[in-house]
Amino acid sequence: MKLEDKVAIITGATGDIGTSTAIKFLDEGAKLMLAGRSEKKLEALAAKLNKNGSVHYLSGDLTQESDVENLINETVSKFDRLDVMFANAGFEGITAPLVDQTLDDFTSVLEINVIGVWLCIKHAAKAMKENKGDSSIIVTSSGAGVLGYEGAGPYIASKHAVNGLVKAGAAELASSGIRINVAAPGPIDNRMMNDLAKSLNPDDPSLVRAAFEQKIPMQRWGRNEEVANLVAFLASGESTFCTGGVYMVDGGMTATL
Image (tube, rainbow, N blue to C red):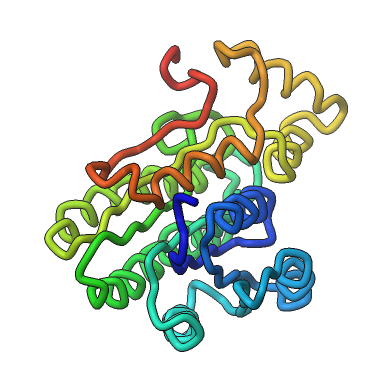
């Protein structure tokens, strides 16, 4: 029970990685506040996962500071504290060359992936300082945060920015007992990656999948549960000397490119 009695927020909770992490956190003894845009999806997920009142949910727009403040306040009101923030919500944007991306295309990705993450870090840290002990913030980035490739300029820019935010946060928050790290998935077998494959090759997405696999030393896509295992480690007391790190979950892909 690595997270026994820990209180955690998971944003983007109804996505594949968010849901897998919620299951893992509950198995490790945590109490959860699930966050996302769709109240209907959150309600269904909370009903599926709830154990003895240990799961609550709140819908909102994480690009709005008032909604993020409300999320933190509701969590503390329900559970009396906040120990873990998993800032997982993200948006891949459209696949198109940089010269064809519109201003709205670019800013919509940055608002969710960078501004939303910064607001979660900002307000979670304020609440966590009350703990006067070990707390953990984990941010979902991507292999795109250390690499570049065609067609995803706004997404790649946003994930590079997130990695920088985490490094700045590590320097600023360590004296308050708050650790902050990045979980950076490579190709994971979920909705986002499968949609990306379809956008890159609508006629035969399997060719995109095969091309990714050729670049991964482990010769396969990852599983959502494998990302959740890393996040649980970074949330737990087993990682108390880890802060400012970018931890890849990519089967060795970025190590060999």
